[in-house]
Amino acid sequence: MKNPASAWRVFCAIEISEDVRGRLADHIQLLRQTVPNVNASWCRRENIHLTLKFFGDVERNLTGNLSAAAARVAREFRPFEIRVAGTGAFPKQALPRVLWVGIEDPYRNLARLQERFENECSKEGFPKETRPFRPHLTLARIRKPRGSRTLGELHKAIGFVASEVLIPELLLMRSELSSEGSKYTVISQHRFSLFDRA
Image (cartoon, rainbow, N blue to C red):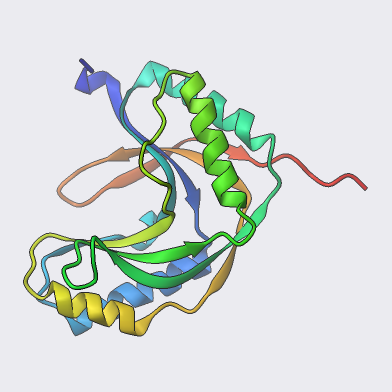
């Protein structure tokens, strides 16, 4: 059993560019102003990110193992682009619990990165995720059903115009929960280091 004082909530993430985060924040603001009475937890601009793998509570002395796994993977990749585009909801549009903006991975670089990271983490004793990898950017978690359908329909109707985002690194992150929302702190940063040779 983990000791809460010695464990951190940990995840691996990819940061989204500031300009795209700004557009996502504008999208959130429009939804909140148009459908103000929905009970939802909205993602703050600075917290918008793409989760590659969520670990949950991890003993602090084991976070170095995860950093080592991320470093090994980062050495195998060069910076690549993904596309932020489209809107959707989990589990379904008619009764949404989570609103998201989609991620397109036309050359499967992101999928390969996620698979390699899963493999390296499993070598460090962390189990692989059994659910399929469905990359997305979470904008809101809806707490109660009242007004959620209207909000989901508006989210879909507005859409999100496609934006290319360059991915140069992996981040191992710590999440601290509080009544004011989650606070994310970088544990380690891993730049992609593979480059084309002339």
